[in-house]
Length: 471
Ligand SMILES: [Zn+2]
View (cartoon, protein in one colour):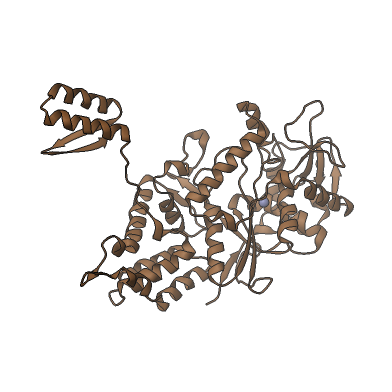
């Protein structure tokens, strides 16, 4: 079975065919770096990592871009309100550039914890592509698709055919939505900003000269410009959160396809949302979880992959603990005979780990599920099925599971359970207390115990021995 993808562009399941044989180009709309990403925001990038691994495993050479939006994304996706980064800088008193650098770094750290290989992905920033964005706006201007208002240069969506074709959206509904907080100078409610002027007499932290005056690019133009200059048009697959279908991605298509007569992307794939306790994840409601809050980020990745990318998933503590148990079981299975080596006549039989054979039947079943519009939950179920199969040897199961993990990227082979480390300061105190006890100096022993407790640790005597625990 070869790959089939549910393409948002047509609303249909389609057989996949790459533009160039043996090569794939993919673009994934990245984060706006003004505040840390919560675990729900990370889903599209877990999926992007999975896609690259899958295609590489199938023998493709992959070029992949995740953009970093560090300017131009307004508080409303439809060009109303303030630039999110500038607003955060004003609120916090921290320089815009410092905010975007810190948040980008944190994003990269999150991806690393999720075992995303950063060196295989290109991460361009919007501020590094200002010229490319200006050039593209000039092309749109030459094609007669733009007009000027008092606050910027706008794309005239009424001047092209098929505006809003992605996701078969209801244009009337979109227009109605766009009328909320409307801009009277727009010719059509769905028109959007390509270039925004800096407000007169107000110096923005991030602004640039352009043929239309000092200002900054609109949010949508960066993706069109980066795809054109980094990957070339058309690309094979474009992905993003489901919330981008109606406005952002339709605007990308309008910008990219109206000047080039080439499709922007052959396939569009959209990720559904992660809820938390049945509700939308939002910092403002305190209903939010960050990757730093999760003990084992790879168990979170496992949990994400146990749902189909197109379904809404509900994050709960119970769901996460179950995923942690399952992940640990898998990792322990992989490591089992490394920790307790089997020996024969004194010889370590660990070498048999490399002597196992990939079980073709299960690997094929696993890939077939992924070929079915990336059905990761069924693929993961196949791993469990294989592990239970009594007719397979341990080493074959292990090698096959590791082969499957090349695609899932759960890093099962290198998982090390975090062992709680007692700081040196505490162990010294514990040792002093042990001495005091052998000398029957109970007063000193109790004093040291109090000190240990004040530092956040408890000591529990068990016969001749003792245990040290965190309070
Ligand atoms: Zn985009």
